[in-house]
Image (cartoon, rainbow, N blue to C red):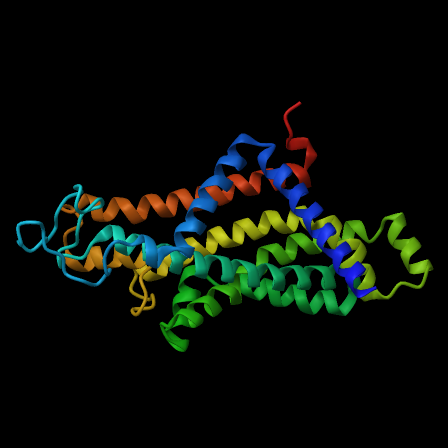
Length: 299
């Protein structure tokens, strides 16, 4: 019996993955976005094996000369910093940090936002009032300054940066999921589930949640994108984890060096990666936006 249950669960997971793969690949832009996301994920996973050099090792060229501020070449594909660090190796290792912060922050924030939105929209009344007023208070907080204050209070460690992002980024998804939940709970199949004696927990997570899943995945992509942008912004302002490398941290080191107008390659590499990753996430979210709102589909 247990083996049969596991087998059915695996079949359902496989079918679900196939459905979402078809949703994403049905749109050319979202399929392109998925391709770039997969590339970034592969680079992040195998970063220690892909990076040709230690990111904090001072490099020398083939003639033994100190390689300071070298433009892109065969030996240094993305050039070097003013201290002779290999930017290609730094970029590879920074991909892991940026994706980790983005995916963990985005994932946790969408879980918080989804649960608050589902509970608030389903129960209504005082529960809805308390949860939504708390959400409104967070809406009154300026986004990036609030993140910087939290990082300053908790510390510049990676886990505290993630915590600071999570504490505020869930608010939009919570309000959207709440509105959708209020609409869905008025439908006949919810009334039928209540008549059969289904518990509130089962109705919320078995009947309502699947119907808001496309919207949930849409905002999950947005939350990850905003997490990446937020981390890059905070790191560029000097509030990143100094013990790890991120794309925003690379830009911060460039600003500290005072070589912004000279070392264009130092600026270009992390900036292009940030733009590519965020744009790819927006492209993927577009596919789920069309599922959530069929009127956006091309006729």
